[in-house]
Length: 129
Image 1 (cartoon, rainbow, N blue to C red):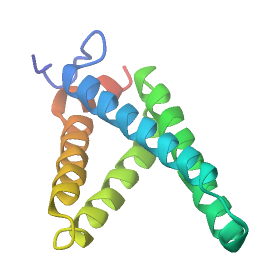
Image 2 (image 1 turned 180 degrees about the vertical axis):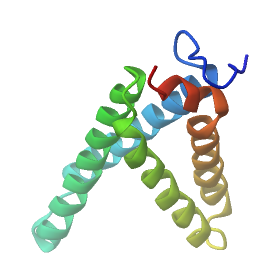
Image 3 (image 1 turned 135 degrees about the vertical axis):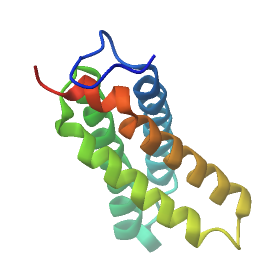
């Protein structure tokens, strides 16, 4: 149900719930990628492997923290979640020819998260009284 403007809905709106659930799936994927990168470290590419793993784990932690903030009705995490989805849309575009299935999954999930975050009831939920 869409809340009228100026009236805050009670509880987390369903579009935002869907968006945050997808972000948490992305967090799990980032953690899995980070751990896999750590497990495949070798001396030939130690610096690249460590920095890649730290990036995946760090970005996963940032997205998880932002999701928790948003769940607690704090809009300060919203900008990084949106930034992550916009970057993901760019990745989807770059993979469109080489791996179209991956591109479709990345693009679809990013779009669903963006729609959920910017849905009218989601925006109204973050407004202050």
